[in-house]
Length: 189
Image (cartoon, rainbow, N blue to C red; front, side, top):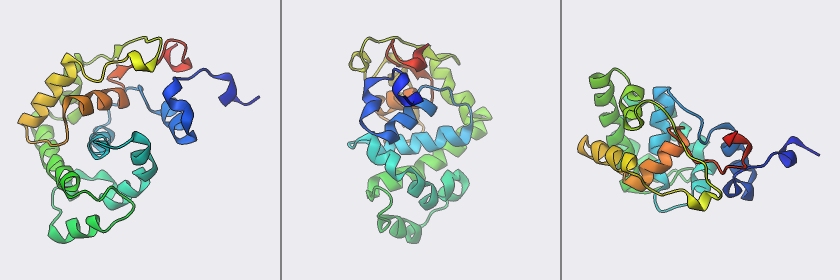
């Protein structure tokens, strides 16, 4: 039997090998790298109204299309670049989400100026320590919390878009600010 079959995982991750890899190697693991934190925030915003698997399947295309999430470059995107992004079948071609990614790059750069790093800013919403939950089922986990509400409100105040509380909570799970693994999952141990 393979290692895959021996490990107990959160049930949401079992429907696709892409989910399994994401679950095992990323979801719920604390991230403190500004670049990764920014990439995940853009991707979570792109996911709004869609399934996360859609974004995961397009992640490499997003990296290419958005200059590997180089916020300095993204902040300077012009109408010509936006037009090319709207024609790129490798990403989610939604003008509002594309414009939000560009605006979010600008807001992200301002936060780095103010706080020294995005990590220093974003982790304050969990007092710089991951929140560890244990759930019988992933369905028991909330879709928003007071922490995600506070993060959303602050990000919106700073000019970010596609950062509602539910998106912020999914982001917190993705970057390990919150661990919502089911209690029998090998990642919860």
